Image 1 (spheres, protein in one colour):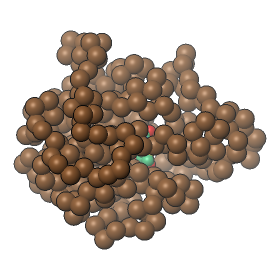
Image 2: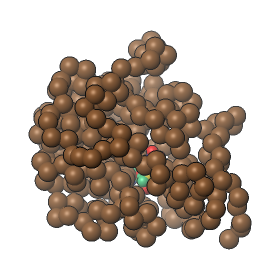
Image 3: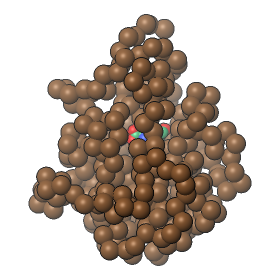
Image 4: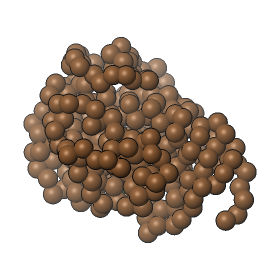
Length: 281
Ligand code: SAM
């Protein structure tokens, strides 16, 4: 294996985030994507798919807590949850902390991400290594998986890669229509939608596409240091509950490193440049 000293994720041809590597742990090409696992000086062990930083041991909670607990605390009684993507297990770990959740399906297209995460990211993948009874792991295309289900889930969490490669179809109106049908009558979904600073077109296009399908669509954000520009967006689409007016339910799992009851509300308060991107773009 070629000795690398640094790894860079390029957000576009002018801007990248570079991390110093102490050890290149693993590298392989699967039928779906190129997987790299590296130990970095700043953020510890890092998962990279097709050159894009996915998760690191030291900052994963900034992403996994926010993509999981915001939708799960907005829904007043979430029981059944579908995670699309999420093969590293970080979202499943957070979802399984909610006692009211009784059934969790996780569907990732690439079984190698699941297996390598179990081997190399034990703290992130702990529920994949020792699955609670309520967790069901499936290897397959999340689009086809969601299409087969009707009126079943309370919450769908789309923890996917970016809209290139195997994740592309997860950013389309057709997929949002299938997800709408797979949700119960008061269900909601959330999807990671990249950076509102350097990937504005994704944020804008997903907002428009979800608005064509769901009555309520709201963007919220977290600060994820390993993603370019740090500010990371999530799009929440809901049939009934509006995060701008609904009170979150009680009983969030404890402890948390990022999420709290105030952040549940404040993460939906958007700076003017994002409001312009969404509402005037
Ligand atoms: N947190 C990461 C981020 O935003 O950079 C994403 C997590 S990573 C585990 C994303 C996962 O989505 C990958 O494991 C990939 O295999 C999976 N994925 C991509 N397209 C998919 C699809 N169509 N169906 C199911 N899983 C998919």
